[in-house]
Image 1 (cartoon, rainbow, N blue to C red):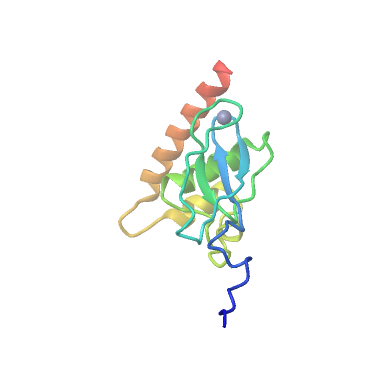
Image 2: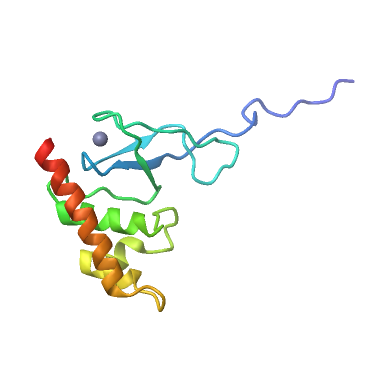
Length: 136
Ligand SMILES: [Zn+2]
């Protein structure tokens, strides 16, 4: 008597969600198909920007890309990224807490991290991005 086999659909993990990646140089975000931010069986792969071919940064499933012309919003995202903030969880409410660039700066302040330090990083990002824009 043959044992019944498990249904064919249960054939190991499949990536069912996509992770958002962004290019801070181009101010563009793309979803990587077949990526997963919860399934450890799905390996993380590098994802080059389709426009400039530089490696994109992984921002998580809940990242919502600002419009390309919203420079301040992109600088905000890059600042958050610099400090290790990601949009991996819907519960973190990162979008809601950090609506503007100054919200983000306030969000990043810690007892050991002064607002002046964050502003210095912010100026560094601004300088980098305005330089990139001039060379575009
Ligand atoms: Zn790019």
